[in-house]
Length: 598
Image (cartoon, rainbow, N blue to C red; front, side, top):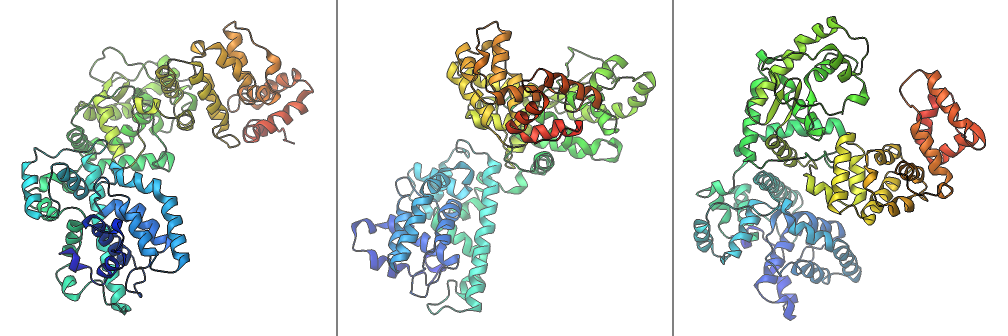
């Protein structure tokens, strides 16, 4: 059917013109040509010569967006699609050939990745691949039906989730329908000399039917009808994934925190495999129940609570501390990310911790029993919300501590992942290149960063090479930006007692971390030559040790003056060295002290 749905693409003429070469013969080349010419025409390529003229922009879109969305390409046939573009460009002037060849060469690696990326699979592309593996004739709708009937369940490709395929399929449906509609309107407004792409009769049957016909032509004959009918359970639609509402809420939380789904959340220390879709539906039911009036004022905060505890690397949080934040109490920022001990057991009824513990949790001296009593009501309300979540088995509350169970961590990770948030597991994060991991870890709570960086080193048996890779990244990632200080500060969370001494000695000459390495060697009683440490590294070590936020300005200025007194050349030389090494951090720390940078 699809051969006659898109008319006047010049397919027959093109195949006739290129049919002399052996590589341009056969059904595989004709199938590739039909898809390439049809998609170019749909996207508005000029067909004045009888065949669509490829442009660099349309070629890039075809290779990186349209083919990975709509077309199943059997193994060994991927190269035919760039070949069709090259043969098509040859129908035009020489500059067209050169321009298209340049785009094809430039995008070739990304094109191949896109076509093999599980994240780009639709149900139709996946089942076409699976059926071909089973020996089906993809051009025979009856054979496609028989092979579908013989499948035992609906397996998934490695690295893909059902929600991923559903979402990609829904997006591809929208994109194809939009392209068909625009093509029809474009031809109606300015009728092309070679004739329209879509006949009035084809459009009268419905754009949806036209899209279905094209999907079948570009994947497997009759597949769309089968997946919409007797085998719809093999390709579930949005109604099968109610928990995506919760996934959207968690995505909103992530965007509020980071503004970009590509910014990774830290991995949990442990994940227990479970039926994540079922668990996610269960969690959604609890979240929706908590939105009812009886759970005010904190019931609507359930997605936030789930996200923030995951963002902590799934380390436990304090009910009292979180309630204090909701009540706008002052909480020391330095304590917000510290893990909360989980008691072995606790009474079921919630009670605010004693005053000394409350002072430790909040970092606010001077609290008394009246303050504790004032927090009792809000904390009990929050504990009731957490207890409802805990009834799912995916969240726990023990005394004042709450968090995600390992199975709950897996569920929240799944929900974040289906909405495109970078959510690695522990093994995945440990396998990252050092620069990638360091860039991410700089935004994680210090205890979590320490765990994940240690995991990376341990998986590489704490070799000198592994340590050198990591130390180099700490000194170069975000260099020259306002994030440089936080990045090099990750050195302080490393357990340098396990570092090979040769790695630390090699770091002595590092212009950023040299003084950190010297201090680590001295604390271990190892031999080290302080003369090797560059001035910039010594200045950064002093700068990072100055109190930047805490304490009265007088005491902070006194700390600087003490450091300047021990610096060769005094305060002016120290300020100059700090500014040259990290102007962003120097301004942040020294500016409030009234010290101007040169």
